[in-house]
Amino acid sequence: MGAAADPTVVNLVIFVLAVFVGYHVIWNVTPALHTPLMSVTNAISSVIIVGAILAAAPAEPDFGSILGVVAVALASVNIAGGFLVTQRMLEMFRKKDRPAGKSDG
Amino acid sequence: MTANQVTLWYLAASVLFILALKGLSSPTTARRGNLYGMIGMAIAVLVTLAVVARGRVDLIVLAMIAGGAVGAFVARRVQMTQMPELVAAMHSLVGMAAVLIAVAAVNNPSSFGVPDPLPAGNKLELFIGTFVGAITFSGSVIAFGKLAGLGRRFRLFSSAPIVFPGQHWLNLAIGLVMIGFGVAFFLSEEPNWTAFIVMTGLAFMLGVLIIIPIGGADMPVVISMLNSYSGWAAAGIGFSLGNAMLIIAGSLVGSSGAILSYIMCRAMNRSFVSVILGGFGAEEGARAADAGQRTVKSGSAEDAAFLLENAQSVVIVPGYGLAVARAQHAVKEMVDLLIEKGVQVRFAIHPVAGRMPGHMNVLLAEAEVPYDLVFEMEEINGEMGTVDVALVLGANDVVNPLAYEKGSPIYGMPIIDVHKARTVIVNKRSMAAGYAGLDNPLFYMDRTMMVFGDAKKVVEDIVKALH
Image (cartoon, rainbow over all chains, first blue to last red; front, top):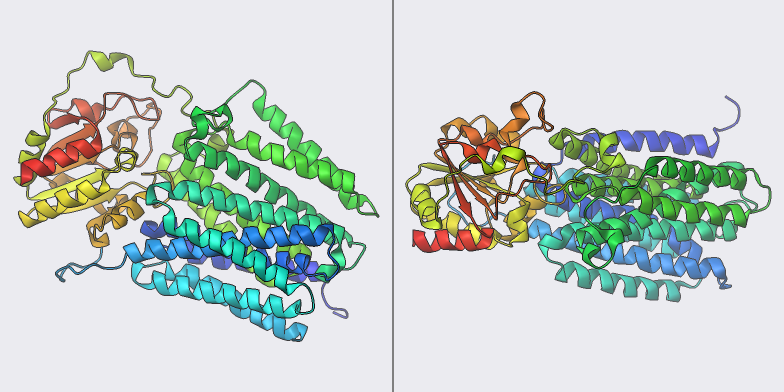
């Protein structure tokens, strides 16, 4: 093992492990919260805003940086919308004032 | 900030994203989880802004504020019945953003810290990220149109499947040509814009073509599948930019969508392939031949109220009809009255009730039905035999006992065993068949009483009778 592994291979390692983590975490999500799961994953996948920011950054504006700015705006819609609508839904699942004594299903 | 520091911050954000999803394992931890997700996103954005501090940060921040304002406005205004449309629209934005970033990366790799000209590996990853993003975008637009009911004005968005001969061969051919141009892009030394643009255009077309044959009943699968694609698109972009956080976030979302698709397919006892190939529900509204000859017992809302208030235990099975009629608040009022009268009331939710995974749970939560009254199909099926009255509101196929009969088209589909209850009350608008186009023997049982009418109207009448 002389040289370090190719970056693509390292990325592949990260990818496979992340899929495993995702698999195990998602199976534990209660079915009642599958809709909030979808809206929050929408927000999370919008972390591609990181790529959009890099694309938009060059001080010399060009074709690519304009696309970058548009991508930043699109991803921001999703980030704000995704997290806030998830929060709104989860508030609805907050336990209401009810006589205690019943265990959760 | 050094590259190492940036990477460590991104690691923190990735961990927070995982915690956000982990929180959803219970309603009590979910809100904290969502907060973790927001913190993770804030870290990711701020660190990246610090990285590009010498660039045009002002313009970027402006775009973020504009986009964020739109998102916040929509999140506040959207109705819970419209969640499927909203989610489809958001998937399309992820897809579009992925495509735009990929184009920018081909245009100027150095702004991403990627060598210019693009190395072969990056080109491959860009090509994958782009076409998955493009398919996600156009597919989600079609799904949005179908869910939002735009089919009445534009046939492209029809909720009935659009099928034509040779459809699958056409899609296959387009897919292969698309990959061909992708390979051409990959093999060229110079950035091969022609190949890249043609490939992206074909991917947009393919996204439309693969969603139009899928009918309204299969929307929960479609929307989960597009959720998955949007994740893979993000992961693809992460690969091409060499950003581990993007890969992790994208893979989490990708596997989430894939698992949801699997759960939805299993709940309909259909294979993923058969859903994707589409055409199901094409004969929507077709009725079984003997429907007219068998008699059903029908009753009024007052009869239903009488049965309900004299029962010890009641299980309510809500379906999409309830959501369409926006009857969930009336249902909550009815439940409160019944509980006051000492009746034990529970809800039984089938995994595909509603238009997206978990949709019915959200609608009930919105009506302030406590979530500990709401049970999943597996949790309650064993007890259905001891239930006095099962009240079916706007559901059909998910309570069809034909699922237990060998040879029936829905044989093997898991259902809520309503037919085992002592008395069954079914509310439907008419005797029309469900999406599967099947007759339902449940309606003809001696113990079944049909109450015809709009779900909201019927429930309101029951409430009146209970007072």
